[in-house]
Amino acid sequence: MVNLAAIQLVSSPDPLENLTEVARQLQGLDKSSPCLIVLPECFACFGGSDKAQMDMAETLGEGPVQSALAELAIQHGVWLVAGTLPIKVPGKEKFSASSLLFAPSGEVFAHYRKIHLFDVQVADGTRTYLESRYTQPGDELVVADTPLGRIGMAVCYDLRFAGLFQAMGELDILVLPAAFTQVTGEAHWWPLLRARAIEKQCFVVAAGQGGEHANGRETYGHSTVISPWGDVLTSLAKGPGLVQARVDFDQMHEIRRNMPVGQHNQFRSKLIEFNS
Ligand SMILES: O=C(O)CNC(=O)[C@H](CS)NC(=O)CCC(=O)C(=O)O
Image (cartoon, rainbow, N blue to C red; front, side):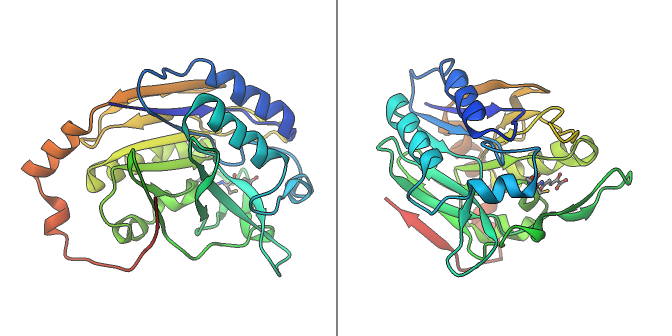
């Protein structure tokens, strides 16, 4: 059994405040099985100015937020997907929206830089988003081969690009830190997430920002754990909280035996792997 968990936040622009909330939510974790916890996109700083994010950007492997995260992973003995953090890109002005996977040892086991940037006019005209104005896109797929299983890493808007997940090959768990808008979340969050779980025949752990933020932005929330059959095992609509589901991978192997989608897949692609 493995406990798959997501912490939902309504992050402020203040990293200390948000890290304190993460530490508080971790107190509710069921540690009777090995745990994987996912934090939301921009968990440490959200709803402020672009400058607030630029100012807190850290160099990979050093900085107060990364140190705090490593400490939490060690303290609780868990695998921790630290949502996204602004991480400096050598030689570039912009930072990458980096999703770091911490091992229970506190080491950064894998590092995914969000590939697809959300430069979008939201349907009801509420807001125009231009993530590329301050974020450097990544260009590598990342699958972390861990003792818990093969973990595919993606962030938020990436969810809309099915080719990304096809290219990842076989996955046991897909993690998705997110900050979906209220408008697009209402319309697309569930069909996209459940489709990914079904087509990859894997568990999906999605951690969202979920509420009203300092700059008036509304995020959709609905953090969740979804089974390889597409069932929603747990979810939380809005507000800070912890969702968790102890899962048995036998169900996943049974589904794959009966419907060997992976073997029938006619598409193959190169990918970057981080191995233990
Ligand atoms: O910009 C920030 O402060 C933090 N980053 C985000 O909130 C990102 C980019 S704006 N949000 C998304 O990608 C929403 C995707 C989405 O809602 C969808 O695909 O429907």
